[in-house]
Length: 145
Image (tube, rainbow, N blue to C red):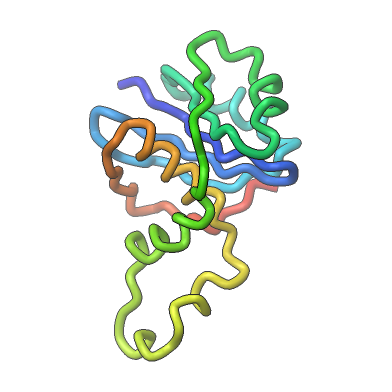
């Protein structure tokens, strides 16, 4: 089945999600240094059947789109307003607080967390107007260095 890549672009790092639309499932969600994104996507399209790439229209989206010139299928730019803010709430939907952690303010759990991959997930969900489930092995804190 064809899969989709969604990118939350940034100057120094980008959130990237690989998902299959028909199954409403996310298979990969990572944060990539911006200078490594081009090579990472090149490698991904050699191993996966990617039908399209969706890029948020925020910071550095034009530069990221230019870096992906080699992708011969559809590249879409999509609204990403407030995705970083919304990613905080989505984080707790994906990773609910349990036990005595309820006594600690929620914000403590997302301090110093990079939410770019979750922002890319929100762009994906907004574009397709549906919620996606996660592959159980996904760790949103992963960095590709």
